Length: 242
Image 1: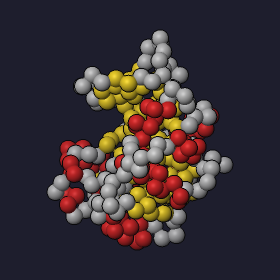
Image 2: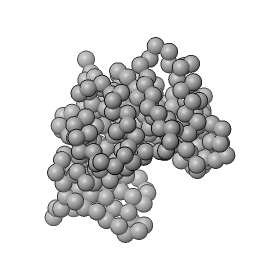
Image 3: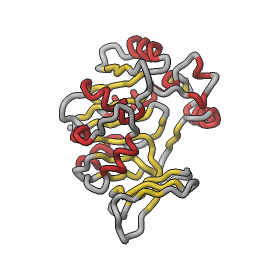
Image 4: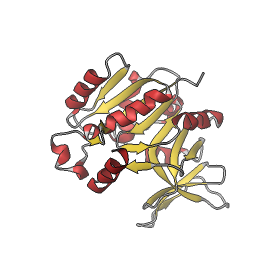
């Protein structure tokens, strides 16, 4: 039997780069092929064995809730509302923490990320390495990278456009650039390290913790991945999934 886990889907974003499409449709319900982004992600997580889903909503959130009620009857899906302001990834995860089942690891997945990543393999890798958090990463062209050693431990972050570089865990060995895929696994002990701020990004937290805690990368450079943030990325994804 596979290891039990639960999942959280970040679906609260406004999808501003997909306007005017997202003026009346939340990004999570934008269709890619015959399914919404939400359905692509939720179905893969449930097929991998997720015992429950937690979903955060903000922009046009009632439409997402209606979609879940209509299409996921009998499936344990819980909603974390962010009605006043977007809390970013860290704040959103903190607000949803009371909906999570105690002790079970959590796969956290952006709703606009579609891929063929091995979710069970990601979870097993996380557990085998006894990590506090495991970040799905891949070798791809972007401006911002996490920096890992040969054992896939996180050491820092770099923006190659601005030249900014943060390396909390110093080392004399070469570090490899890998881009974050918007999918990660967390041990719920991570909540003990959350800052007092209500609104913060998870990337900042991982960089703060990596010198003291085991945060690692899971490379899935082979296979398909896309982050649907722009119209051209949506068009590409539609070609693949149609």
